Image (cartoon, rainbow, N blue to C red; front, side, top):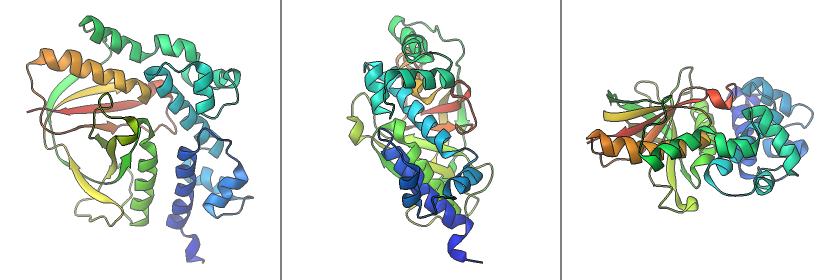
Length: 285
């Protein structure tokens, strides 16, 4: 047995691939180049990737590109052609075909009819027109996590999750049923995207002590307003606007002096974008 090719070593190698993909989504991603990043044979590495992650490398690239594109469509005024180029598509036609297949509507229609639009209408008119989302106030028990800091756009925090999971696996801390959570320290409407601070973490087994570069931190441990969000992650920015601009100001509650955090309840690798479930936790005083 070659211990240099253990399970955790393969995870480490392939995490470099996913990190590289996150950083180069706008570029052409050549399989041979990705094999070099992984330091694995170009004849076999993508089969190892599919076996470990449950999706092909092509599916990963497509999913990440379209997730980033949905963020641009929901939160910017970039033309569809610009979004296509920024997400690695050679033209608007190929991008539209891929987006429509994954999201069930064209990029133009998604921009004008996606779930984020309903949230913005609710905030603009001061009425609760969104009936598929609820806010529950409850005590949230503390969760012990280990994670990696991320600086930059919140929509790119997935890179930090990949690194955190790999490091936890290498330290023997990964297990089924881990909770995937992130804390967001800055307001994206007040701080430039490149300067935003967040942390991506996974829950620890009882008594576990993570080693660097993993950083231990705790979320919860108090009363929170919890908004259950269903749909693409890109629509969550508008959900925040509704939560703060409509629910909080009319609720009689006061936000605590601690940042908002999120929990991701299913896996984007095997879940359609419109079925993704996330909880947004707003700590209350």
